[in-house]
Length: 85
Image (tube, rainbow, N blue to C red):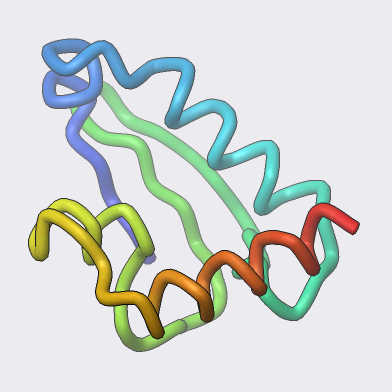
């Protein structure tokens, strides 16, 4: 289960990102997209119940490493292309 603080979303102006993430996971059935089973919220947080996927999000890896090495970039690019096909 992923939880995101609403104040963090508002402060960083990520409302559109959070909604888009939910819609993509909810409506697309693809092996490279984590399946969203249920989403709910309370006064302070948004919650998304999804399949467990070790390793974290692509955005996390880019943010923590500042950039991806060439092999990782090729790997993630290929996955994104397959999803878009």
